[in-house]
Amino acid sequence: MNKDHQGSCFCGNITFEIKDTGGTVAACHCLDCRKASGAPFMVFVVVNKENYIIKNGTPTSIQYADGIKKRTFCEDCGSAISYENKNYTKTIDINTMLLDNPEDFPVKYHVWTKRKLSGIIIDDNVAQFHENSDHWKKLLRE
Image 1: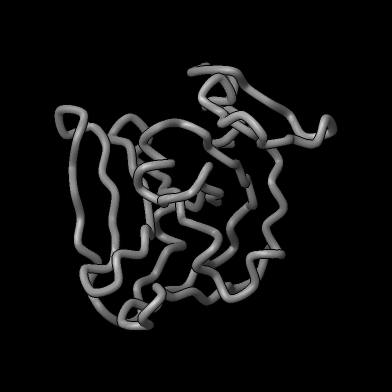
Image 2 (image 1 turned 90 degrees about the horizontal axis):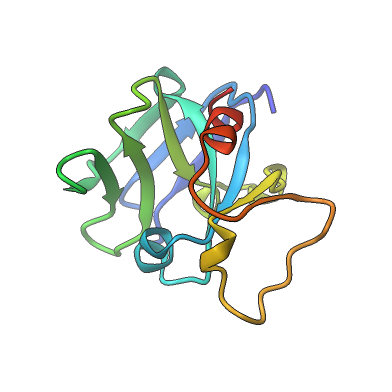
């Protein structure tokens, strides 16, 4: 995944690029991700902050969990763009479904699977983490 990837929100008012991602990709089944995306889970790629470049527009943000967590989205169309956690200052999680070629980002991990909705089937060959774990957090940030 050592190439540049372009992305945009649904309405196209916000465009961005990610460079040299390193490529850790996870599907998160937590309630926050489900609510933010309006989907049964959110797929994101972990990117070093300096490799995430907003080309056009300004995402709106919301901070929560006592200011520890931050999500950005497009104010016009509502597309969920990114997630940040103050405990991980060097990385940002980018919604892969907003990238022009999301198929370039196969899921390596499913996290918070204890929150997984019934009927969602996960490939047994993909690592799964039932709940909050320092082990999977470390894997995602490597």
